[in-house]
Image 1 (tube, helix red, strand yellow):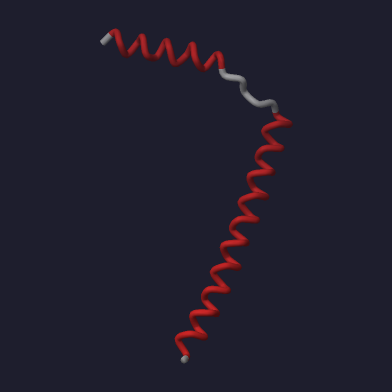
Image 2 (cartoon, rainbow, N blue to C red):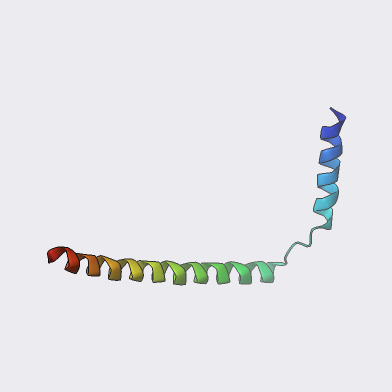
Length: 61
């Protein structure tokens, strides 16, 4: 049972070593993530639309 407490103490010690981002860095990273997600989802949407149109043309023949 002592291994649980040892583990939790080690986790707490490691968490103190973490370099947490500041507010500005966090906001900047969040905005970059949101913009990248929107660009990628837009690309996937447009690709899906193009493939859908091509398949509709092929199935009509």
